[in-house]
Length: 90
Image 1 (cartoon, rainbow, N blue to C red):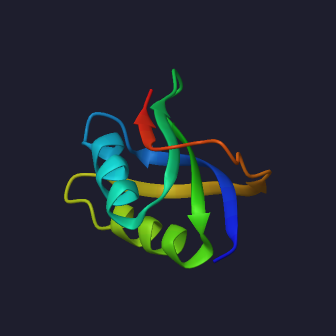
Image 2 (image 1 turned 30 degrees about the horizontal axis):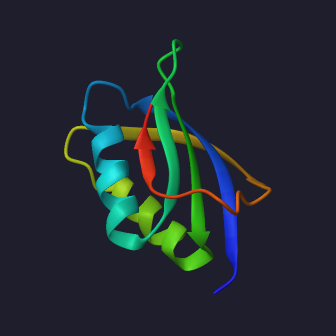
């Protein structure tokens, strides 16, 4: 499996609704490394590293949250961090 790393910014009702914990649970269940954090402007920023299909599945799981609503997502592929382990809430 080829690893990729993506940087995301999520817009919408994404803070105060369990988004980061849902992201952490999804990442750990799919073997994805990286991090997620709330930003001062109400967005959530995340970097996820793993297989392309696993990252796609993670995004689908995030969109199924009961109270959250993702209006828009910015994403770009960035260099892989070889020595990274785990997924962390910052």
